[in-house]
Figure 1: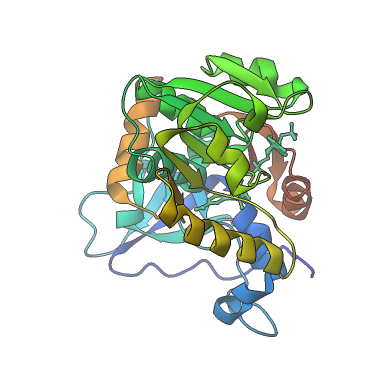
Figure 2: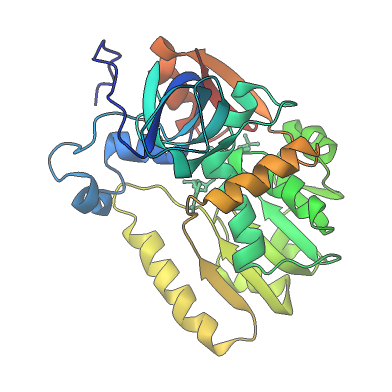
Length: 310
Ligand SMILES: NC(=O)c1ccc[n+]([C@@H]2O[C@H](COP(=O)([O-])OP(=O)(O)OC[C@H]3O[C@@H](n4cnc5c(N)ncnc54)[C@H](OP(=O)(O)O)[C@@H]3O)[C@@H](O)[C@H]2O)c1
C-alpha cells in the first residue's frame, strides 16, 4: 500500500459545508485500518480490491476559508475543529454540523487531536459506562490517544481513576489526573485487589473472566479497542463468546464505536476551555511525512496523540 501526497484542485464547498484551511490534523488507528483495508471484513465497506475513498484523515482543525449558502453559524476566519474525511490536506470541506469553534486556550494541534479519541472516551465513559461521580474507573491503555482523553474526562466527572500503562508513561498518566497507576510491565491489573465500577478497555488483552474478577457486581466493561490481526477471527469469536456469556452474569459487557456528534464536540470544547481536558501530543509530522506518522502510530506505542501540522 502506497500513501502519496499529491496536488489536486481545491475542493468545492457544498451548501451545508465550509472550506477549511487546515492548520493541523491528527492520526488515529482507523486511518491505518482504512489504508490497509484490515481487518479484512472492513473491505466490504471500504472497497473489496482497492479503497473506495483514497483521501485519508478524519480529525482536523483550521480556519474557515469559505462557507456554503446554508451555513449561518460559521464565517470566514473562524477557528474550528472537528471531523472531515480527507483531513490530511491543505484544504478540506466539512459539514458545518461536524465542526465546533476552537477554544482560544488550545492550539490547532491540540484541537485537531480531539474528535475521534475524545468522542470515544466521552461516549464510552458517559453513555456506555454511565459514569457517576465517586465511581472507580480503570482505563486500560491510559497513555494512548483515547486513554489520555479518558483519564481527564473521567476525572472531570469526579471519578477515582486508575490508569494502566507502562513504566515510561506512569508519570505522564499521573500528571493528567490519574489517582492510581498500574504498570502493566510489572503487574496484571486483573490480578490486583482493586474493584472497579467501569473498565474502559482500549487494549483488549485480557479475557472476559479475568476482567470480571476486578469488576464490581454491577460494574461495566466497555470494550473500545483490541486485537488488530488481518482476519481477527479469534478476536471476533472471543467477542461473541463474551457477549453471550455476559448475559448470564450481573456485570455488563459492551463494545461500541464512537460517533461524531455536534453536542459532544461542544462538550469537549467546553472541557478544554475550562482546562479540564488538555490534549497530550506525542509527535508532530509535516503533511509530506504523513506516511511516517501513520507508521509510528501503527507500532502501538504513541504517548497521547500524533499530529500532522501545516
Ligand atoms: N471503538 C471506537 O470507536 C474506537 C475509537 C478509537 C480507537 N479505537 C481503538 O482503540 C484502541 C486504542 O486507540 P488509541 O487511539 O488510544 O491507540 P494508540 O494511541 O495507538 O494507543 C497506544 C497506547 O497503548 C498503550 N499500550 C500498548 N499495549 C498496552 C498494554 N498491554 N497495556 C496498556 N497499555 C498499552 C501504549 O503504551 P506503551 O507504549 O507503554 O505500551 C500506547 O501509549 C485501538 O485499538 C483503536 O483501534 C476504537
